[in-house]
Image (cartoon, rainbow, N blue to C red; front, side, top):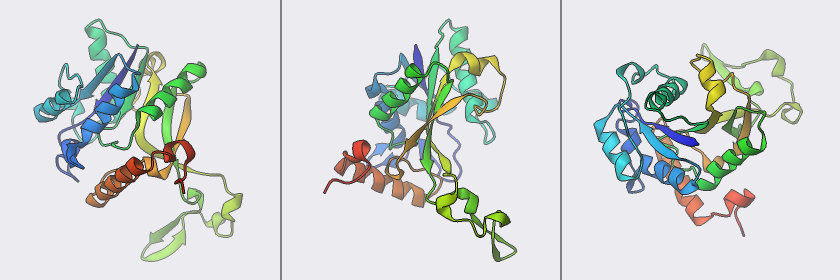
Length: 242
């Protein structure tokens, strides 16, 4: 049995009301809930929130909200792992247990049912791993990044000044879209993070992901969403058909 957990705290500061803000005419969390339901991967699709308003919107789109998140885990410092643990323990106390969980971000409007299914199959075919994380490749290896120190530009790592990008190991960002995990190894270790799990990467294209922290991020996510609607072949080929 698998559960989709969608964390959606009510206290977003950088973009107030972000989790239910209208995204191309629909609350952004609605896209995520609908993708989870359409994937057919889950026994339960639930939203973890401290907000009655978010809970009402979540239910309208088909998610379950059997309880509100505790105040201790509804602050700026509560990480995703803590929220997942709280949800799994609350369900267990009610006699419901899940062998796998998938955390889907409430603002991951670019997530597609096919990608959720793909990540689920990765766990099916690799019993030795404990999770799957979505990544996106950095445009250039991050080991050759520049920084600004005291108003002056410098290499973050001095030894990389003369390194050729083609000789460097590729680097990735967390795509902040979804995390699949096996619940037994996760619950067996009291941790504030999921980094200890043995995880496989599901690498997404830049078209498929957009972390949203600013209004500009939001606009870019809407552009990508509209573009993917017009070019669904990107999800299969990674390129626009001519």
